[in-house]
Amino acid sequence: MSVQIFRNNCRVGAGSLEQAIDSIPLPVWSSAKSVVSLLVGIAAERGLLAVDDPIGKYRPAGPAWGDDAHRAITIGDLLTQTSGLRQSIISEAASLLSDPDIAQEALAQPLDHPPGTHFVYGQRPVDLLAFIVGQAVGQDLQTFAQENLFGPIGIPADTYVWLRDRAGNTYGSSNLMMTAPQYAKLGLMVQNGGVWNGHRVLSEQYLRQAAEPTLTNGCYGYLFWTNRGQSCTSAAFPSAITVAHNMIPSAPADLFAMVGFLHQNNFIIPSLHMTVTWIGALGDTAPDIGTLLSADPGTSDLYYNFFRILMRAVTDTHIPDPGPYQPPPTNLSFDPLNFADPSVLLADLFPNSTCNILACNSQTFR
Image (cartoon, rainbow, N blue to C red; front, side, top):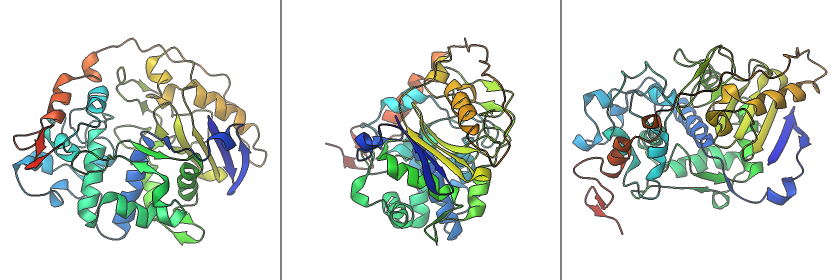
């Protein structure tokens, strides 16, 4: 695991494996979702889109791109994982490298809830959001990201990998690979309120909003997990659970984070001007599959114990010791349709009459 701790923009702690893995691009998994959120913020600051805009404003014409109900989903709904679209994490991942068009696949899923009313953590809605951002800015998403985010913070275009579907759309939900120092740069830029080396990359106001909890999940903002709410709902793997406390009780309440599968994390604590960044694999020991696979940040003993120990080293601010980790009741709810729904996979492989795994919009795949 690569671990780096920054205070006041200085690296004050690091793990023993930094030199061995610093030059290797590694998957940051769902931290890519937070990157898409940053791109939304950049586009919004330039007046190219607004969080309240319905996606129908930016989608192409034609029945393959959603009915009126789907077109009414807002950018904000996609940012907060409240699109209402049917989700199933494993089924969404199962079509990787075979996806004909992830945006059309998202729009092929039925609405299980009215948009904006229910938090359901998923992948395809963020893929749709990445597509919408590209439509709104009039550029390929990766070109826009390189010119306005990665390039300005010193991440060259030939040093990271971001996968695309077979239609050329960039996956917004995951499939971004970069080095640990590059990943840390993203966290540090966020820590500095959207500024890098005196250059403003995106607005501080957007970042403040991205870190605020939503009404549907006290642990979730704009594709960032947050410590600011008092009710924390997990991803539905194996099933969604809600705990009645903030995400990491041992950390300051203003912490918010980029969180990826198997613990790829950038933790930002504005009140301490601290960033903790790690790229790792596993680490939890709590007897719950959702916790072990980092699907439930609110029950993580790794997060709790790490920050409990780290906060003891902060001497200029008093941070009370919350006491030992108390594991929640083991989540025994198990419904495979929560995470492996065949209908979701089928809609991904055959989203509509003009798009499937063999051909999409008159383009034949080889």
